[in-house]
Image (cartoon, rainbow, N blue to C red; front, side):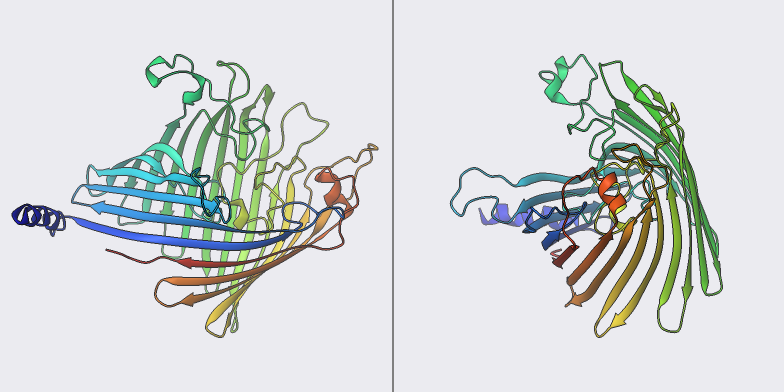
Length: 425
C-alpha cells in the first residue's frame, strides 16, 4: 500500500513538470444589500428589503505546451435559503466555466466550452461578475492574437433545451423556449444561436475595435427564428493627460415579426488632474418610435450594464427600456486612507417620446443617480467594498416603469461586500 501511495504521488508530481502548470484557487464572495427602491421606485406601501447573498467558487486551471483547461465550480445561495437542518438543497451549484483552449500555433487557438466572453468596456459582451451567477456562453471560438497588438476572434454558439424532448438522441426539434415569461428578447432570455467576429488593434496611444454580431431568437414555433445583427466600432485615443473614447453601434435584421432599426453612441473623455482622474461622458441608446412600424429600441445584448448605466440597475438589467436612454455622467475616484472612493453622477433622460396613460408626451427627464463605492484591500487575498446609491426620480420615471401608485420620497440602496480569493496551489 505504501508503494502505491508513492507511485500515485510520483504521477501527480509528474503533472507539474516544466512543461505543465496547474493552479487551484478559490473565492468566497458575500454581499449584504439593503434595497429601498432598487431597479424601480419603491411604493409607499412597500417595505425595504434586506438579504445576504453568497458566491463560492473553486477555480482549477491546467496549462501545458499546446493546451489549457479551465474548470470553475460555483455555488450561489441566499443566506437562509436552506434550513439549519435540511435534506433538500436549495442553492444553485454547478459549473461556472468549463473550457479547453488548444493552441494550433503560438498565435492561433481554438477555445470551446462554457466560458466568459468579454471585450473592451463590456458594453456588448461582458462577464457580469457583479451578479453572483455571472454571464456565460456555451460557445466555440477561434482566436488569433499576436505580439503586435492585433486580436481577431470569431465565435459561435447553438443552444438546445433538453426539456423539449426526451434524451438528446431523440431531440428532433430545435425549439428553444425563453427562460422567462417576458419573451426571448428579455435581458435574461437565451438565444437559439449566435455568431460574432471581433477585431481589436492596439497602437502606442490608441486602440480600435470592430464588432459584427448575429443573435437569433425564437419567438413562436420551431421555424419562427428572428436574426438580429449588431455592427459597431469602439475607439480610444490618448492625448497627453487626456483619454478620449468614442463608440457607435447599429442594429438591424428582425425582432420577432418586426424589422429592426436601432442605434447607440457614446462619447467620453478622461482627464488626469493633480488630485484625481475625471471622466465626463454621454451615452445615447435609441428608444421605440411609436410612429414607426419598425422596432427602434436598442438592446445592449450581452453586456455588463450594471457598470454602465448606474449601479441601481434601473436600465437594461433584467428589465427592458423601450423609451431608450440618454445618460449624462461624471465619474471620478479618490484615494481615501488605505482605500479608494469611487463616485459616479448620472442624469438620465429618455431618448424617444414616451406617452402617459392619457396619451400626453411626458417630460424626458427621468432623474439623477448618485453612486458611491469605497474599496479597500484586506491582506493579500481579501477586498472590502461598501456602496451607497440614491436615485432622485421624477414623475416621468414612474411612468416609464409603469407605476400608478404612490411612491416613497426616498429611493436608495446600500451594500457591504467581502471578497476573499485565496490561492491554494
